Image (cartoon, rainbow, N blue to C red; front, side, top):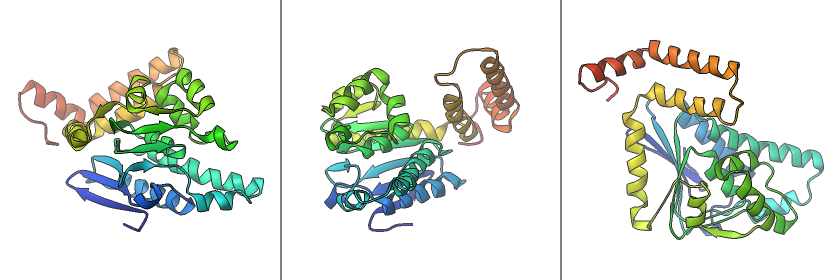
Amino acid sequence: MSSQNLSITQAGAVARITLTQPEIRNAFSDEVIAEITAAFVDVGSRTDVRAVVLAAEGPAFCAGANLNWMRRMADYTRDENIADAGKLAEMLRVIYECPKPTIARVQGDVYAGGMGLVAACDMAVAVDTAGFCLSEVKLGLIPATISPYVIRAMGARAAHRYFLTAERFGAAEALRIGFVHEVVAADQLDAKVDELLKALTTASPNAVRVCKKLVMDVAEREINAGLIAATVQGIADIRASDEGKEGVQSFLNKRKPNWL
């Protein structure tokens, strides 16, 4: 699948979804949102894909909503706005819940809705020259749809500041608040992404998938009897699985597991 908006490629066990509109700073529209959603559904369902990279071409990663889409939105009724925002929310959910681990390869600036794309991925690696901004309040708007993912990524304390001030902040600050995991020079970006991909693609595919869901299920929940019981069942299930048994046996017998 490919279009003027994005491309999907696969090399070995790694799929790459790349935004391909550098001339408009990879700003998205309802059409692009539909394509990104379909792309993540596609790669997430492929049995030969072990990890997914979300990337972009040009000087900016994603500048949020494009101007033509914003012009159309300005005339929407409330019901039309609800339907429109629902599509953006669905795209973010599909990225966040993709059964394969996801990495945002951030080669340039990230603004507004683009922050949601990065936050919905499991990991983010950014170049040291990238800038970040939640600019919505400057337009009389709020980052509502992206907020569940952005707040999880940067934490409530940082969100209180950057949601309210719409300040632009740099990659070092994005790293400090936990919005990205690594910051590197431009010539080291692919090497760092490849380092993470190697770790992801050499681990047990089933364990990686279940581990991702584990984080979603456990994060920010009260530690109570129900949660403890769920974690006990989770480890019992994975120990009894084919890959769980194979992983332990290969470790004990000092050999490579069969998924390598």
